[in-house]
Image (cartoon, rainbow, N blue to C red):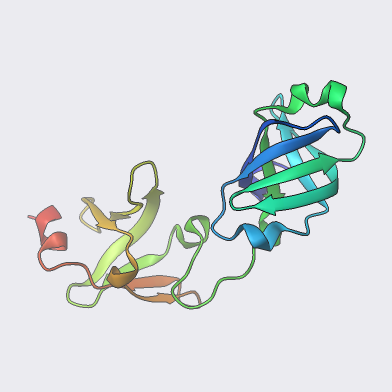
Amino acid sequence: MTITDCFYLGNITKPFGYKGEMDVFLDVDEPKNYATLDAVFVELKGQLIPYFIENIRLKNNHAVVKFQDVHTNNVHALIGAKLYLPLAALPKLEGNKFYFHEVIGFTMKDINYGEVGILENIMDNGPQPIFQIKHPSGKEILIPILDEFIAEVNRENRSITTQAPEGLIDFYLP
């Protein structure tokens, strides 16, 4: 199993109590979907190591996790480690909801403009995620990812149709 076959679930933040439990930050939209996990991959020294879960309790975007065969004296070696799950473990999304990794390469269309280009990347390092689209002319077009801008996600045709604000797409093109 490699990181490219997985998605980032969260990371171990600190020890919790004195029974070998750890506080885990879950970097997911719906933590309750992960309340019954039985195993995760922990990244240690660039390798993904499977750890089996003995107990998990959710609280908002955090979980208190006890791994099998991890005791109080070896918890500190795991602090800061990133947790991963196989992509197949992601809950299926429908309608206009999507995972960022699943739409890369989709054709981007706009209700008013027509075909805009190919979705090359999603920039998710600021306050608002942004579609990064390569127009056939080679120009880059950026469209904020907001529910009110997304008209349709068509997985079968591998396309996303937006209704970008008037003039936004024209701003990027001569």
